[in-house]
Image 1 (tube, helix red, strand yellow):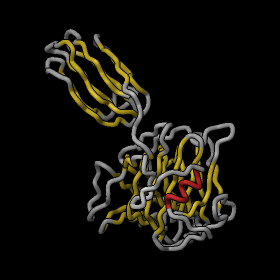
Image 2 (cartoon, one colour; image 1 turned 60 degrees about the vertical axis):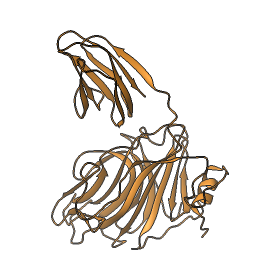
Image 3 (cartoon, helix red, strand yellow; image 1 turned 180 degrees about the horizontal axis):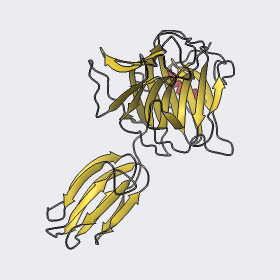
Image 4 (cartoon, one colour; image 1 turned 60 degrees about the horizontal axis):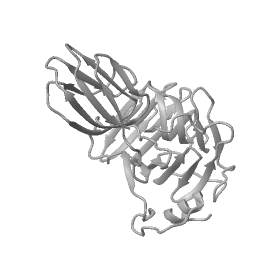
Length: 332
């Protein structure tokens, strides 16, 4: 087995070499930005950043002493899951990187699958996994790496057929560091700095949405007498390199619903150019006039309003009430 320092593994994977920061292992010319994933602390989950859910007899999803435990229970479709409250926005110029420090308490649990990575899901218990990149451990103890597009079966490569520095990886019950580095042209899977596998697209994308959540789940495919348990010590999603997008603007002068973007982005600033006392502007993190509200601005209030926040689904603005003002929205 070839074991590499993380910086060397990264360079080998992407066939690029440069100055390395010996402290962090990062390229000295790149900024590493944490997009998602504050630390787990104590025994109360921070619901602004994480969601825990479980379903079925003896299932559980809980934080204790800074460690999240996900227990499938013994029922058919029983599950325990963890998902981040926000996505890590993807910019084509910069790869994203999923990291997780985790363990399983038993490598072999009949009819139970543990899976963890960067993906999007349809809400429910258990999830329907829509798209993304992830590790998976099946009931026989076989590890696989996977990528998936919406509406299409996952492409899975099992231990024994990996194309990295090792072809086989045997799971145990110790804590390990799992990483997935991904962008449009490739996805690399790494365990404890050992390069495991690389996916490269051919005629279709590896996944249809690269802006994804952090997730982990222990789920049963049948009823049983043994629960599958996965413990998550820490996890985050990073961007390799600083944001390079030049902001865009839209000027709104009528009372209407304006869909500004249908994907993730950043709301920089709202400028009120002309005041009207009864006019308001509601800003939604969505590609429709519904869902999470970023803020409500009265055009009778002097601006500008500096937001500097990420939106995760889209950006829609509704102007209403009395005569319309004149507002400029700056975003990317």
